[in-house]
Image (cartoon, rainbow, N blue to C red; front, top):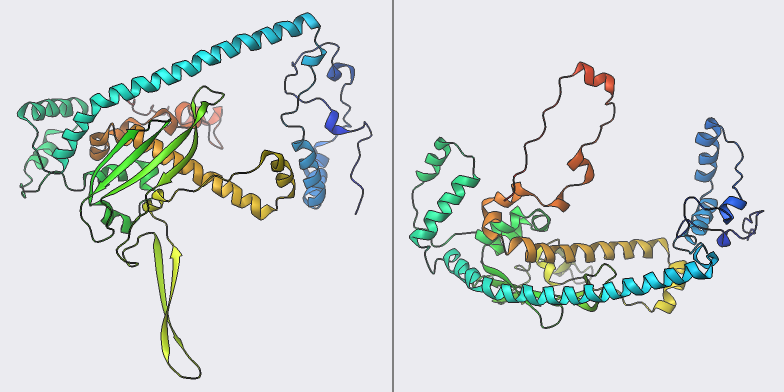
Length: 405
């Protein structure tokens, strides 16, 4: 095995890092030991060094590994401060800790307030459920107020409205496909819904939630009698850690889902069934072989991924010994955990409180701050755009304003 590359300036792991090191600092290591970098012309930089690293993956990996050890390392700047200054730093830490205790108290009281008001929402949600399923009809006052709100929010012409009013009443009970339509209009959720799921989601009676006695919440999906599974209720429960995170918010811990009692393999939308005939060479008899493979489905939502439990003392050794394949598996698990958490939060915070707006599609037009990246919000120059091009082209119109109430 070849010897590792050694820096002529000593052990690189003991070099200062940007963390906690001011940009301008007199008498610091960075000032007393200015970096010396040999001149590299553009041609060598673009071709020579890049090609050397590309052709030597072992060297590239070694450099990346060494740089990785510097991330998050303390620079030693705090330790170099005079005693009186360090005392002030310690004092600020104490003051911040007092503020964090108040933040924790605030979050806990906020959760109590949310639960108190949620109890006031529940009768309204129950009324909504009965109208959706045809058990009750809205009052004349509710219809009148809803029409006024629709006229204020919508910008449809009279001809389009007349077409809607001319649709013949087929005597439908309630609002067919209400929750399926609402779910399909919520983009993150709709991406998990397959055609097979859609047939099953038509049987949804209600989607609601309840707070847990411990930090967390439970999503409740109520179904009509259907040919797919025998469950009347499917639940998904999200648990948070007892202690608040650094940001002052509750930290997601894990989720549990209901076991679905499928009536048959054919009706299980979370699997694919592959059947093939196999002939015995000796007896010439044939038999049917079944192969079951997992399938993408919204109903995988009720079988959430489990976060791995790793001993902290072993985590560093594990990271060093992990193969590329294992790292890919960890990244895939992390992505699935993040998506699972996001789906639960969106159903809780977006879908349930604004279900009618997701059904009509009104909520899609409003958007949410996190739905837009920086380029979409503030604009970005595309390749080839320049000041010269702007002189030749007419000014572009601004996109229509997104009006939220």
